[in-house]
Image (cartoon, rainbow, N blue to C red; front, side, top):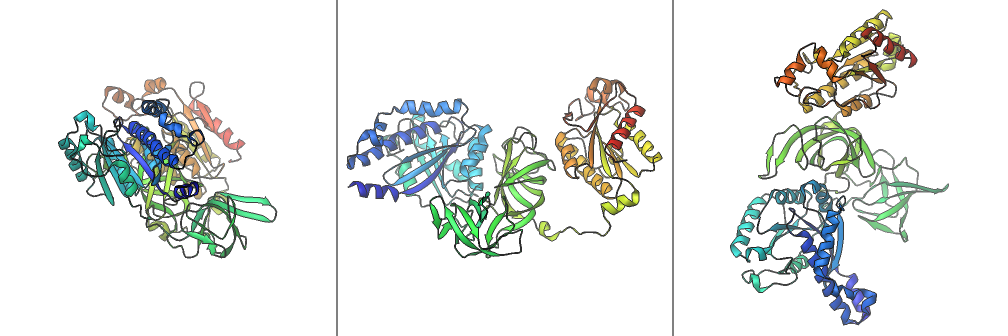
Length: 624
C-alpha cells in the first residue's frame, strides 16, 4: 500500500455515529477505554504498512496503558464533566467512529437524550451480574423514541459471572421481550468483557459457546440506511449577514433537502416568493448545498426575513405553522413539571413562551405502560399537548429532526428543564383564528373614561389581601371608576369549584383567573385580583398576558406568624393539626415576589391607609 492509496482509503471510510448508554457502573468507561486503546493499535498497524514515522502520526498510542486511559475517562465524570455529551473518536481499518459518551447516572438522562438525537447506533451496556435495570429500560425507550434504528446490546462483565452462557441467554430473553413493541431494524446481542477484551475486537475462547461476530465487526457491518426524512428544502435562519450596504445573506444550517442556485423559495410568514441568487459555504461559493451543511444564502429579491424564520422551497408541504401540537417529552429538572405553567420553548433560533396544556399520559418505565398523571418528575417521559403564545413553523420529528425537536427552559434561571419531539400539529391550531371586533379595549376604555389595568394582590392566607382590595374598590367606586373584584374564595364557588389545592390545581386556578382578568381588562375595567397565587411563575404568566403598564403586582407583606395569629377562618390551626393538606405556608410553598410593583407593610399601616397607598400609586401611574 502506498501513501496516496492509504489516505484515499482513509477518506472513503464509512462513518458511524455511536451512542453508549445504560445504567451506572455497567462498564461504559472501561469499554470506551478498550475501544480507544485497541483501535489505536489497529490504526497503527495500517500506518506501519506505509512506513510513516511514529512520532508524527501518533504510533506512541501503542504504549498507552489501558488502565490509565480508563481512569482518565472515569476521572472526567468525577470532576463533573457531564454537563454536555463528550464525543470520542476512533477508527479501524474499515470505519471511522464518533462515540457520544454519556453517563449512566439517572440525573444525567438529559445528556443521554442529547447524544441519542444524532446517533446511528446505540450500544446499550448491561452488567451481566445485575441484568436489566430501570435505567436500561429508560435509555432503551429514549433510543427508540429518538429514532435510532440499530441497537447493540453489550452484556458486559461476563468474566465476573464465569462466562456463564445461561446468564447471557436469560438477559437476552428478558431484553427481547422488553423491546418487542419498539421499531429497531437490527438488535445484536454480544457477551463481552470490556476489561479483558473478550469479544470487543475479536472473539475469545472464554465464550466459545458464542458464535456471533465481535463488537467491532458488528459495528463495521451494520448497514446504516438513510432515514425517511423530509427531502424538501428547509433552513432555519440563524443570522442575517449585512456585511455591506449591498449584501444581505441569510446564514444557517440546512435542516432538510437540498438547495440550488435559481430554486424558488418562500417563508411561512410571507406570501411572497423569490429565488436563490448565491450559495456560500465556508470555502466559497457553491452551486448547491445539502442537509446539515452550514451555508449563507442570498436572494434575488428582498423578503422580510429575520433570525428564527424558516426558508423553504415552494414544494415543502410538511412544515406547518401552528401554535399547538402534541409531543413526546423527557423531563429533566428536579422541580416537577406542572401543566399550564409558563415555560420558554426553544426551537432552533426561536424562543417562545408557552404551556404544557394537557399531560395525556406518562410512561411507566418498568412496564412501558401508559399511565395517567398530573405532573412529571425528574427523568419522567410523557406524551403531552403544548400551546405556544404565537404561531411557529414546525414539523413532526420523524420527518425533520431539527424542526421537530425543542427544549424547555425555566424562565427564571434559564436552565434547560425538558426536551421534546413533536408528533403532530393539533388541528385546532389551524382551524381557529382571532376575529377582530369593531368595538375593542380602547373604545370601551374611552366610554368608561378610565385607563384599565389589573391590580394583582398576592400574599399568605390571612395577610389582609381581600380586606384591602375591598376597601380599595369602594374608594375607586366613589371616584366613579368602573371596577370588578375577583376574590380567591368567591371564584372557587363557581368557575374554579372543580379545583383542589395541589400544586397542579393551584397553577390551573391562577391560569383561569389570569385569563378572566384579561377579558375584564379588555372590557375597560380596573380589575382587582385577590389570590394567594403562591408561585412566581404563575404571577409572571398573568403579567405576560397583558401589555406593559397594565399589570401591577401588589405584595401584601404579612409574616406567617402574624397570619397564624389572625387565622380568621381557622385554617392554620387545621393545617398544623394535619386536618388540612397542601396549605400555603405550612406544607405548600409560598414564593415571595422579587420585584413587586408595590409592597404593603401591614405592621405599620392599617387596611384603610394601605388602600390609600394604592390610590396614590395608581395616580402616579396615571391610571386614575
